[in-house]
Structure formats: C-alpha cells, structure tokens
Length: 373
Image 1 (cartoon, helix red, strand yellow):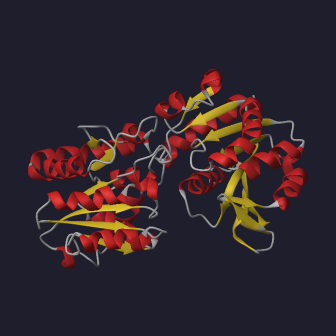
Image 2 (spheres, rainbow, N blue to C red):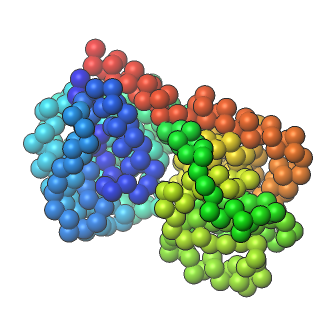
Image 3 (cartoon, rainbow, N blue to C red):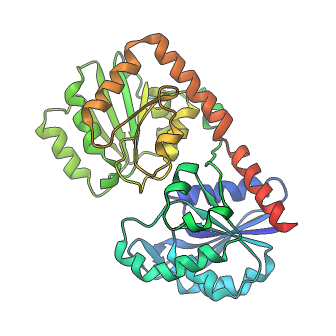
C-alpha cells in the first residue's frame, strides 16, 4: 500500500502541515510507503525532493506567488499528474484550493481521503470561486476525516455527506517524555509568579486582546506570557502599554521549538483565547496537556476547541470575548491547590488517552486498510 499526503506547504509552519508531516513520518517508520507533495512556503524556491527515509519522500514544488493565503504553484499540477498513478490512496488536506485543483486535473482514479481541518471562513471572496471545486472534492472523497465530532456536525458543507465522515482527533508526539528534564532558563525571572502562557500567531481570530485585558482583573501575583509573532504585534503592545500592564503581560515574540517547550514547562496554566471558528481544534491545547497543564479555552460555536478541553475536568471553557471570565477561570484554577492538581492530572490523562500520534496514526491506518481492501 502506498500513500500520498497532499496539501499546504513546506517548511512546516502551521498545524495542518504538522499533521501531514507527523503522519508521514510515523507511518513510514512502520515501513508503510507514505510520501508528501506540497508547495514551497517561500516564493522563488526551485522544485526539490527531500528523502526522509527509505519509505518516505517530500516533493516540494515551486511557488510563484501567494493569493489569499493560497500558494500558487502550477508545477504541483504537473508533478501530481506525473506521480499519482504510483499511489493507492491520496490523502488530501483541506483547505487548500491549489492542491484540490491539482487533484482535479491529475486524472487520478484511486481512493481519496479528504482531511477536513477547517472550513474556509476568512477568504469569503475566494470561496465563491473555489466552491464548485470544493463540492467536487467532497463528492470525490471516499472518506472524509474531521478533527472532532463537533466540527463535523457543524460544518454546513459536510452535512449532506455525514455518512462518509469520521472523526479522528489530531495526535502529537509525547513532547513531555522527550523533554521532561529540560532546563528552564527563564524560571528565575518569574519566580514567585503564577505564569499564564499562550502561543500563536498575533492575528485577529486568536483574541489575544481579551487575554491581555484579563490582566486588569488579576493582581500582581500573575504574569501573562504570549509567544508568537504576527501583524498585530504593535497594536497589542500598545494595548499593553496604554493600560499600564507592562509588568503583567509580556509579548515574547517568535519562539524556537526549544523555547516553546521551556514555556510549557514553566507555566502554571495554558490559555487559548481564540474567538472565531477559524480555530478549529487548537493543537497548542494538547501540547499543554502533554505537560500536565490545566487549560483555559473558549466556547467557539461550531469549533472543536471546547471539546478538546473538557470543561471542569482538564480546565475551564469560557465565553468568547470575555476577559473577566478568563481572569475568573485563572483565579479558580490557581486558588485551590487540590483543584489545580486534579485538573493537571486529568489534562495529562486526556492527552495520553486521546491525542497521541500513535492513536491518530492507528485510526487513519485503519481507514487506509478498509479502503485498500
């Protein structure tokens, strides 16, 4: 059986690409042929192939430009036409109009798995042009995978096709087990503080302004640390300064993988303050759970975020755009040591039972096996 993961871009910068890459590496580690085809993240790069191991290769095609966050790569069409006949199953990751077009033009006759990571929400003008192709790929797919039952149930495009939809939660490596002896460089700087950590691109749907404002309802025992870069950096920094929160809220900027692990280790609570359904799952939540951290997340209608974080068990889910509820949740979790320990343990247990790369890979491999038979 030979699989091709199709979608997004390389190098890996976001959640969809990480799911593709991790799945490819894990399956090929079991001697299952699993390759990956994607566009280059940066424009101008030439076509290339990276051999990961004897059972997996990443094919990267040249990106000419980016339109509405879509990498325009005509050579991905030609590449797929040239190699698609080698594969028993193509696993396409949505949303990505370019790779959907490539599959449409490829002439591929084999089995197709459609991994529905999220609806197209921000690029509504693009959706008008893409919708016929989106309808085609939904009908063409033999199986549609969603990252949570919640998201599948609330995605209007998928409701007519629920008979071929399956929920498979995203899984990651146990990054805590690999890094449990990590030395935390910043520990002394925040000694005596209750540390609230958040991580993500500084963009509007992340709702970081509400997390910042929650500091107005917290005393000086708390510090909020926000990792990540993005277009709203200056606006958010000004918000912090204008409200006199420089000692309570810190924008950390871009964090390396090693830095991210340190802040997961350092923090007392992880907070995901996102406000829109664009946040379909929230992989950062399960990364925090891996480190036994209670999570505060938001109740985004139609999203899987509040399903990932089990309210009252692994943490607390609050209403979107509600800074006071975020602050109250922070105080509730940290006030009672027994409650904190209980949510910390439950957080780790939920990760182990629900969100490991082994569990995700096994579920998807079972889907492949059913199609291949």
